Length: 332
Ligand code: APR
Image 1: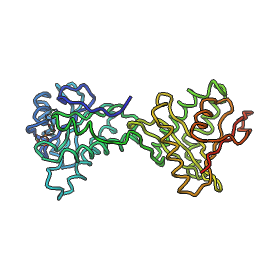
Image 2: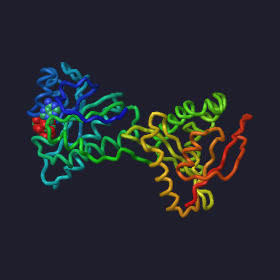
Image 3: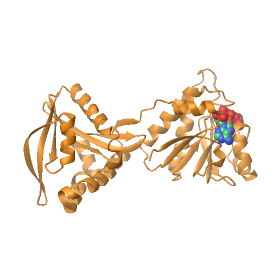
Image 4: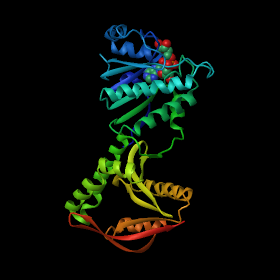
């Protein structure tokens, strides 16, 4: 399920938790989407806005949606385009970020944005679309709790610009924040329970997830054991993760997982290309990994990617469990 949707339509009709209004600093209504939202919400919206004492450019404030299908309206004030002389790009990005901050603070799960500042305020539509998309995509990489962001385009020009945005369908981002570590731990538990129960049994999966894939275990590996973790996002959806550690002149690929529903979308190939780039930058001679002997699917996938089997390795992982693996190596 892609988190980001681009539609053509009237934002006042959308049945989402919150719609965003491209307002002016007074918050007392106007034309364009501001006028449409106030007309659809009814007079209570103006009364609620009068109590907000206006809003600065680049900032945002929330009110109920009243007669609108959406529970909330988040009013934001975009910059008036002045040929980029007054930090307009920064202020437009701030509008999206402030709206998303309010979304996060209010447990809102679905939100729709109009194309802020691209009407009366004259912001060039292509740049506005890129700023909107990149700001939202960046926020989503740390906020998986947000279920859907809709870009609601009213005019044909914006709609075609958004649909032709050559955005990265796949983003690979270094894991450093506690939120990102939580996302990895969540993915790990899902993937291990989906993929390994049939291979090593539920008991060992539970032990592995609790001992080596928990947020604490991951944080310890990052902070005390020089592991680097990366999250792989597909259409802004956390869809896999990688953990690596340089060991001598070899780069150990400790974990490399893709969620079941994202298999076949090219994430594995992209992930490996990413690891190979890091290995080359570190002057590593090879990328090594261990894979459970009975994990036939993964062994075949690594084989296809150019890894060679270099022998068995059996390791005692505690609590009476033993990992019976093949060691595989990708020569650089
Ligand atoms: N649904 C979705 N989008 C809409 C709608 C609608 N019902 N009506 C207009 N739009 C689109 C416009 O096509 C444009 O792409 O909203 C985008 C923003 O245009 P404006 O509404 O003109 O907003 P903006 O450029 O940010 O200027 C804000 O205009 O209405 C006044 O009070 C508002 O002073 C403020 C200024």
